[in-house]
Length: 215
Ligand code: GRF
Image (tube, rainbow, N blue to C red):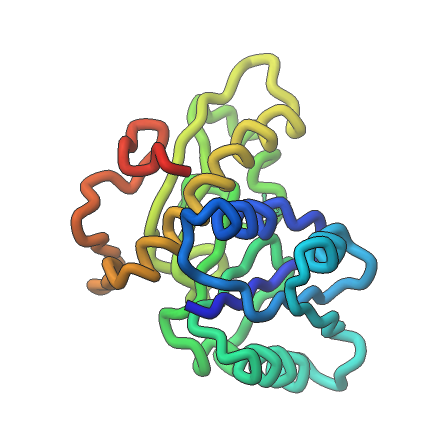
């Protein structure tokens, strides 16, 4: 598949995809990275690895619709098959999603439907849950709430800070995101209403998932 990756900042999930490709664990290539911010680390990673990228900023467009049309155009030009939101801090509307039906996935740092939206790790700490994690899901118009493809769980310890918890979750983000891309690339993922079935995979969860050991 040709992957299009949308980012807004650090780009560590982008890096996890790059690493999986370079290690031969993914047979896909990144044909376009779009950042909505200039000078972010995600862009440095593109430069370092020779990956095509563009910076497309919301403020350069009169409306959200025009901004999203520009994103679509760049992704279509790069013949993108799957769009990966990897720390992209904007909500996409039907203008965008209509061009890529069930072809947009997102990584979110909680076990959705818990703690959607911003600062999911802080929300988990504040709520006092003992287990949290991360989710890769298809993107629909509802924020952080499309059909779940894979989840990984981690413990929350009494001494955790937002930073320590985020780091523990991030480790698993970097494993389940490439894993899901591989499942989709292998044509093993189908959506039945809200449920996602991955052919030949019984587990959608870490750390209890032997199928994820590769990543
Ligand atoms: C990750 O925690 C991701 O789950 C969330 O935003 C963060 C992005 O991190 N959506 P990075 O830019 O991939 O390092």
